[in-house]
Image (cartoon, rainbow over all chains, first blue to last red; front, side, top):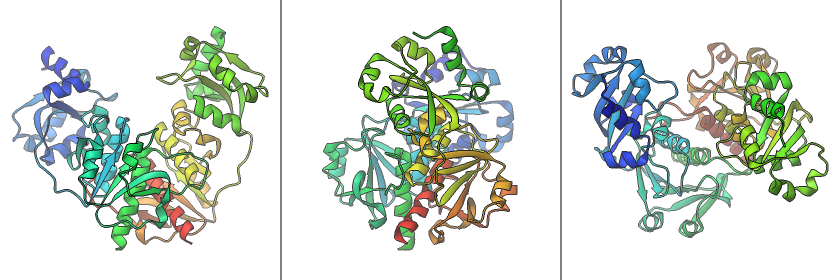
Length: 248
Length: 248
């Protein structure tokens, strides 16, 4: 059984203001729950699940105190999904384990769409990049749409919010930016360690940051489209960096 | 001024049933309208726009008879967007101009998400691939979410619905499929002409089709993510095919 107070608290977490206030966020669904349970990145404050899911996960749940059995109807009330799944986790925003940073870091200026951030986290995780630095005005990692679209990868990729100019100036690795009109991606040789900078969905990288990027690189275009989505550009660059590392 | 009958008709076009019945679909926003006006792929049946947009496009609009000035409020009623834009086009579903097919064709089995189809059309357009073949149970091209997320590329890419087994058997080009466990993408040499097959968002390519694909290829994975989104996989494969063509 859920109290009205609990329902209200969980519902409030769709807003950044309340996530910050309570330092809590939610993650939903069987696949994502399995990933959270098997990793140690975020502390689980509570698990709300239907009986079938609790029965199936009986063994692993023995280590958690706060497991609350809920009805489908109750789950529906606290879920942010259109089609509710069997389980909703209440997680602490504080990262428990610090990852050893990967050779490459992805930096994004003013990323706005939650689906894009989720997809980029998933792409980074696929290619073994575990550090993403976002400008402070970017979409919040703990937005439910971000968390869900990572498909669980938020447990393996660190996302930090920084003043990008200051952060980039503090780096010793070479900096590459996805910039229309830059040199051809297919003629670019990437080093083993580096930083990849991507820009806002419609405005690209701000002119202030462009000055700090020594290598402007573009994905060659053959057809008529004017641009590519930022998560698509991120995946093509990450793949190219990975391919060169593989063939090194 | 819009009549109630017009408003009802346009609103009904968010459903496939009514798009098929009337053979009409909608496309919205300044950028997409500019692309449609400058191409000849789909016949424009009507243009609904606010005064500011009509004034700005006065010259090009002289060739169109059915331009209807609407208020913001009226546009709001017929729009499918959360933030309405200045113009909505009513287009005929019939393709007027047949494109010369590109060297590569993208084939997708049971694609379900409208955003994914829109993104894939945009990616194909970027890389100069202008033919996409979908299984008959895939998402409808004329779904407003598909059209909007192509960012105008639907004017330059032909999308057809076929029985994929029959279609693949009729082809002479070599067939490549994105399949987990296939050979390494970075060790694959693609021919100049070919067919790329991608699968459903959660189930991949059906076993029936897998038998018809001579080359199973996978994107090497370095980190922890179990899979990549189908539009991401499409962009990485398209980029790799393009890169090899560029360096040929």
